[in-house]
Length: 353
Image (cartoon, rainbow, N blue to C red; front, side, top):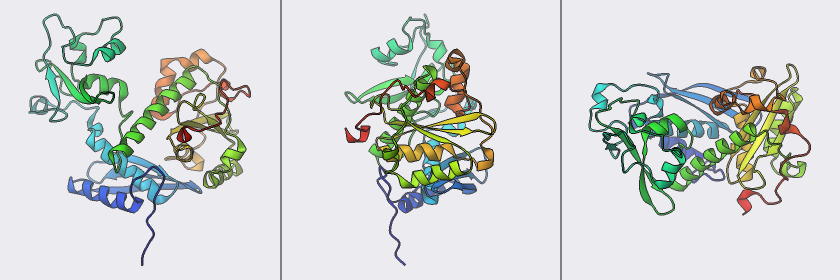
């Protein structure tokens, strides 16, 4: 029986094709994936936890408006983490790897330490040096790759392509691992699809950090705009019927960034959870934000958040911003919900520019 392929905005292949192709690639690499758990707490919100049968530490989560979309999301993230070695990013890799032909990638480049311990020439470009080391305090030994710990080999640099002129810039693996973790890692059916996904995540994290740290007040998304997305509205209506008020905000900071913020309140204990999502297509960003709100959570799991606070200094502390980066478990300011927003709702979305 013929089945119509499932195609989504911004995805350059049918979900069925993406799932089959990635599953086969992962299997060819020797990984045996199992779908460990599924959740569908409200209509149009699915999430799945997948893992390797032989090593449960190699796992990812996926989310989507349908079961297929959630599985494709999880498999894409699994392949992304395999490709970037993220599953093993927290481990010392041992002397054999440290002294092997390469530690992370065959095209990595090692830069020997200098006698005066300056940052070796050839690492970073002038703009990045000014960004990472504005006071000229950085030393080469501070950039030793932590996973190999091979000081005698020097600093491990990975080749990145500068988009303005397609020139190669070597960035220390130490900086990538310490500052960015998985932020900006992405996978896609095409190069541009992966780029959009990676850039969207970078925008999302940057804007989220600014909104929380600066206690920015956001404009609510107008009802008539929300009404254009009935599947999302059905999810929100179900949550509200279960006793969880939902507020959807425009996080574009005046139309500059393709970011949305959705906040869930739990009146039972006075807590809330702010979910952020980004994509050039407004509808995709909105759906992504709502599905992120419930990824890995059932309705009974919505009582573990924290209450908003009036202490904006506490909100801006690094110790609060870091957990937001990891699992969004930090505190947010009541200022986010002020009627008098710091930015107007933009008349034109980023996707229409």
